[in-house]
Every structure is written in structure tokens, then in C-alpha cells.
Length: 387
Image (tube, rainbow, N blue to C red; front, top):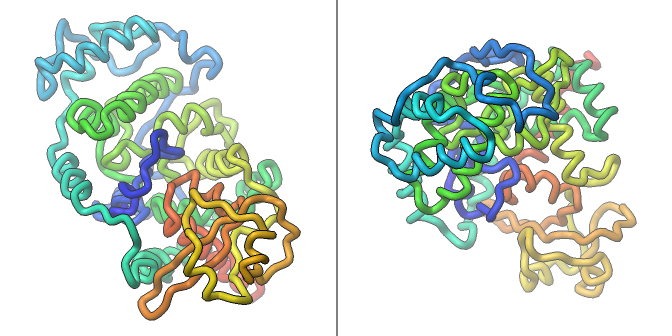
């Protein structure tokens, strides 16, 4: 994703890093694993999981991979922080120490990731520059993303219908997330998750605590789903699958939507259900708007504070001479969205559903890209279906 990701990190990421450091897409700068047109890009053939309710208490013999060592060797030999982490996993979750010693002995330190993040940290900007929205939008609102969305919708129409009915989330917004994150599996990342999370847990001081929590959750995820933890690949920050879930989000919101006995974020159906469930659990309001334009005294918007942290009632906006262009009878707090085009500035109103999208990634630009792609994909799909 781009630098926007770093500017919008919160104490606890929603889907966390899914990572905007490549403009919202999972490792868009990397070579794609495959262009799947809706088919899974996973090379992992996970066995059916144990009961998810018992995952935290599954003992070490359920861990996969056959790793074993008396101590950690390789890139992380001598890291006391790694040894302390292993101690915690043994004591807290019942992992076998020799198994974790063996696993971390083959983990690789990703210096490229550390260098990239260090450079990005130094170049953060507090306010969007002129044309920032136009540049960001151009990365996603193109024929490749839209046409891929239409193809994916055709291939997985029934799963999208079922998810929309079960969770109350329109199919186009599920697709908008997948379009921005991975272009429907074309770019799911090429970094081993164990390498990414180990590097960021023990060599990235700025967010080390957060990533150690994700590493803990990744090991729990791998054990509960009976996956070899050295096999999954994802973004350079450990985000996984078509929807780029971090491990903590997997444990809390991923679902087995194809009913095959395990959750696989590289599987299109499980990804569809998981994204829809994420939206639902974060307060998506079926049938309610996402954004609207403004009418009235538009110059008043320049004197108001935009952004996700500033809330406005409909009454306060009316007093300022601003009105939404739709009549939604909204009692919920609204947010002022500031978009900087190449030639002008634009102000919109963000409704609670807009805020729900930002729980996936805490960026106004990200949520607007998802929203506009959702509308564009739906329009293109409807047009193709009527021919």
C-alpha cells in the first residue's frame, strides 16, 4: 500500500495492515502468484480443522511440520526476544518448545521490509496534498479492476448472493474490498507469513508489540486449522488471502463459508463469507447509504474539520448551511470527507457504512476507492447481464 497506511495506523488495526503500503493492494509491487480469475491462489492443502472452539487448548502434537531443535539457529539465533516469545507460547498455549525452536530456526529476516518501512516512516504527511485523491483513485478505478470484478461476480454469483442475504452486505462492497486488496487473488503476496511476522515482531521497534500479537495469533491459527506455519504466503506484513486478513482478524472473523470443515482465506467462497462477516460484525447497516454529496453553502465545509475522528449531527450540518443530497433520515453521526482532486477540492458526507469500510483499513482514500469500485463493478455487471 502507500504511505497512507502508516498515517492511519491505530493502536489496534482492524484488518490491520492489509497493507496500504502498496496503494491498498497486497504487494502490488510484487510479481503475482497467478491470475486466477476467482480461483484460489493457495498452494496450501490444509487438512480439515479440529473444532475451532478447542483451538487454544490443542496440544503440541497437533502442530504441523515436524520442526524440532534444541535451540534457535539461523537468522534468529541469539535473539533473547525470540526465546522469551517461545517461553510465552509454551506456557500460555502449550506449544512444544523444541517444535518452536525448529520453526524459528528456518525463519528468514526480511531486511527489504525493514528498509522500506524505515523510509516510509520518515516521509509521513499529516495532510493530503493537492491531487492526492486523484492519484490514489487512478490506481484502482480502471478497467482491470472493474472487469476482474465482473468476472469474479459471474464465477461466484451464488456465494455472493448467499453472503449478501446472510450478512446484509451488498455483493458489490464485498467485491470492492477484494478488488482493492488483491484484485481478486491476482496479488495475494509472495512473502512467507512466518518470515514477515518474525521480522516485524523482533526487528521493527515501532510496531513490534502489535506484530508479536499477530505472530502469536498466526501460530494459533496454523495449529487450529492444521496448517504448516512455514507454508502460507501473504503481504510483507503478514496479511493473507484474497481479503488480506491479519491473523487476529482470521481468528475473530474468518468463516468456513463453503462448509468444507476449515477456513481458507485463499478460497474464494471462504473469503467472500469472511469479508461479509467482517462488515456485519463492525456494524454494517443494510439498505443504508455509504456516502453522499453536499448541497447548500459549500464554502462552510472549508471551516469544518474533516476526517474519521470528527463527528457531525445532521442538525449541526444544517445549521452550517450544508445538506446531504439524499434524504436518509439519519440520526447517526456523520463524517466530513475531504478529497483533493487535481483541479479542485471536494467534500462529501460519510455515513456509518462508510465508517465500517474504514474499519478494514483506517484511510478515507481506501474507503472511497472501495466505494467507487463497488459502484463501478455493479454497474458493469448489470450492463453485461442485460445484454
